[in-house]
Length: 109
Image (cartoon, rainbow, N blue to C red; front, side, top):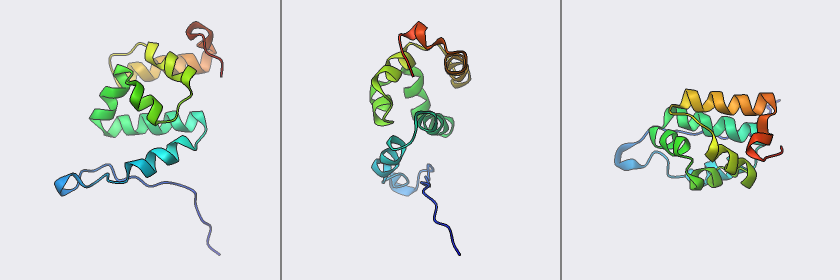
């Protein structure tokens, strides 16, 4: 008996003529259907392998955060997080999520 999986597979490598990620809308639609922690994991995963996504995340690009389907209040406090590198940004995010310091960013999860 086979078991079907509800997982999206993503090929981030650029193919000749920039055709490697032509179904980005399907990917982001899948990301938006996930719970917040999974959305953040997927967003950071993209940032790890794609420099453009990494730079947009570190800049707090509202279009990227909106595209990931993050709630407005989460978008607001993510823009305020410090971090010059993805590692520093992730540490700031972890501190906020794991210590319950969301009140500092006027956000409740």
